[in-house]
Amino acid sequence: MGDKKIYIVAKVFDKPGCIAYLCKTPNEARCLPGTLEALRADGVQIVILDDPEIYSEYAPYVYMEDMKDFIDRVSQLNRAA
Image 1: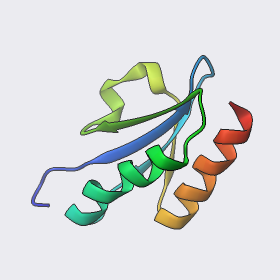
Image 2: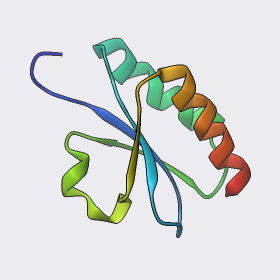
Image 3: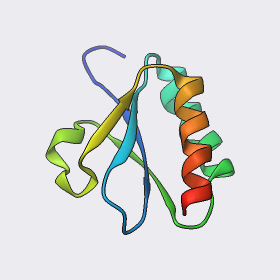
């Protein structure tokens, strides 16, 4: 992906904080948002960001290293929404 970073962020509306995943490949950046969008419940927001730290409305960030763990956590957010 060159030097461009793409983060996928999942957040429950009106609750502080979010979880974020740094895409490791261009394919992840293309496919993961659609997968999450298909799984998400009402009240859960999926956002694509290039630099999460400039978007304070999503803070605090919990960064996930593993894509499967990230998807599992998004599923848990669905229950919290």
